[in-house]
Image (cartoon, rainbow, N blue to C red; front, top):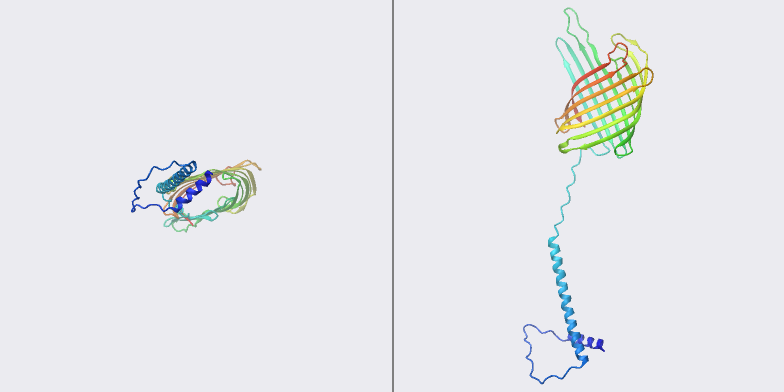
Length: 330
């Protein structure tokens, strides 16, 4: 019974036009007191009032939701602009980094000296491999001061070259296994050729790029090397010398550190202890200070030390070289 009354009241309310503000409500007629309402009429009136209250509550809830949405839109910051793309580097991963260096010494007059040296390094790094090529060479002639009535003959003071190929398989970002092979010659030191092969383990302790382009890098190697050395004496008289073999553990380290912006200190050192045949040790060290003049051109000075505990007959154990050269990054 209550449900039917509720439906009737709701239908009547929907059909009755709502009063406008311009039309004042008609004054209540003076009538006789109304008769008492029945239970059904009171229920219908209560249902009507409940429907009106629910409608007003729904409108208030909708207005509150709209206000909350506007407030949220006002407080949310505007979307940040897309981050600018990082500047492209000159060399991407998988491309070759090539460095070419050249040194020259020339003296003329009472004495004459001409020495030319060069080097070329190339390296390519991928996710799993590192390939490296190193080569160097130098040639020099010198003529002592002329003696009256005689013509001095120039003599060779430098004649050497070398080539080295290396491939690293990266097991992790730190550890890699590698194979290395190469050949070198030094006529002044009576080494006609020295071919060698090597296999070992490399550890990259750190490779950091610091502020203002400064860097810090350290890699060490532990391996076994075998080499065959053919000997021939070129100076002062040409003669054959017996060949020798050498092989044993080799330890190496490459260190770079940026002392300042565009100023880099480099150290490359290796030690080979031969356990084949007679006891012998080879030690090489190259210390270099490089100053960047432009993005591709740098000026460097280097000091090279080569020590052989058992050199060919008639040769001294240690050679040194101080050089000034230009390097170009291609």
